[in-house]
Amino acid sequence: MSRRDRWLGHRMVFPLILLLLIVQGYPMAFAAYISLHDYRLTALNEVRWVGLAQYAGLLENPSYWTAMRNTLIFVFGAVGLELSLGFLLAYLLWRPVPAQNAFRAILLTPMFVTPIAVGLMFRFLLNNQLGIIPVWLRALGVEIDWFGPDLALFSLILIDVWQWTPLMVLLLLAGLEALPAEPFEAARVDGASEFQILRHLTIPLLRPVILAAVLIRMLDAFRVFEYVYAITRGGPGERTETILFYIYRVGFLYFRLGEAAAMAFTLAVVIFVLVVFLFRILRRQEALT
Amino acid sequence: MTGLARGIAVRVMPTITVLRWRRRWPILFRFGMLSMATVSVLFPFLWIFLASLKPPVELIRPSLLGFEPTAVNWSEVWLSSPFARYFLNSVIAGGITVIVSLIVGAPAAYAFSRFRTGGTGLRFLILAAQMMPPALFIIPFFLMAYYVGLLDTVWAVAIAHLTFIAPLVTWFLIGFFEDVPRDLEEQAMVDGCTRWQAFIRIVLPAARPGLGAAGLFAFIMSWNEMFYALMLAGGHSKTLPVAIAGYWTFRGVDMGKMSVAITSAAIPVMIASFFVQRYLVRGLGGGALKG
Image (cartoon, rainbow over all chains, first blue to last red; front, side, top):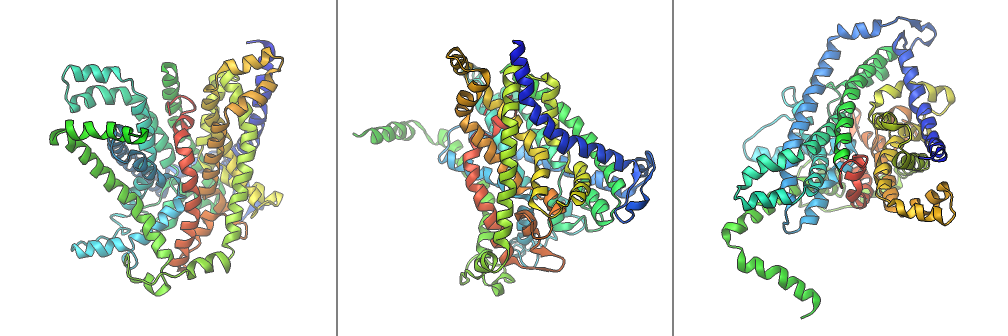
């Protein structure tokens, strides 16, 4: 590469770097500053340095750990179900089937609707007085309190599954369609059964795409906010308090910005680790193609 | 036999003659499973759309059909409430975000794809930047917007959306520039263009579908985003998601109007999604996954 090209490359990247420094770098440094101070919106004149006390405080804050635990249950529950269901649907869509394109286009639509609308849609649909699903269940003799203490978090997981399984389908189906044809022909000639092919050929070949899809979904699921905001607001009790909602509560309802910023950094560390894994998988994929 | 009829015959005849029940049931089974999935995807949309046509008394009696459809909810939301304005706010915030992201992201993505500028480190940074949790930036943004006087404006929302949408668009475009054959720009440079001119006149037009898909997807992301919008613009500069959330609060519920708002917000993006779907995988993988 010539020096002129290298110089042009730097100039072409520069505006993006500048923008990111303004909208990400500066706010991040500011957030770090806030997290090291006792910074309350109600007492902006009395901001004082507290070092790592905010972070140390989190370790002893049971609500923080409850929120983290709920978030982990949500992430693993939702992404696990989405992977199973998404793989099933992608597999069904892989080979020709009548109305294939229509199925595909319709099945992908939920992921494009704003999550707050999806949350409210299901709050309405599952509501014991207003929704149609409890009416049908009652006709079958089943009474379920979807947003009661036992099921609330699970219901939120189901809503996430409804909205985001399509992304799983999209990524896995693309992965399946990019698989080479020869190994499958060879396996069929050798008389392998459908299940054997799936287990020993399709899934191993698809592994990098599966991992990338799971990580992309996990990164998103860690930031769950809208469903909680739309339906339970963290309740009943703290049963559906997720980390992003708890940060919102502490920062914008209790005005303890320092504590909220410290929590945001702990979440950022988790996200960062997942991004490292995702990046490594994508790079390896690229080396192959 | 016309061409079309021949095509149908060729496709249909073997299916009828060759496939016996044993070979045909898997297709029926798959068709059945996919139909079930499709029904469970469409049903909530249908329910909300029907609710938007119900008169207020019908809404407390859950039923699918058997009501007199009315347009009263639609006219109240669109004509006698500021909803149209919130709709416009979302369009403006999305528009600003998309335009800035494309202007800044396209040259950067080209530089990554052709010169590997900044190497692996910078690429990783672009991916990490779009994934960082909004909770990290919201507090500084809130304070900054407050001090600068941008709080409760569409500008604050658009700037906040740039934090993840600008890197996302860049990441998307890397893959699409990879797909533009290098011969094109090399030919233009032989003909006397500079590299920059070749980028503007040859590569950008060739990557138009990718640019369109990335821009449309970025618009959808901005349109759907609520966390920043809720904190930065609660008053008259509300965007659609915040406005939708306002229909069901502790103070009261208005199902009919909420359903109108949800339908109105969902229809444009669902139409847009049909144009984006094809390009999404290639974009999300930053060129590493095949679409």
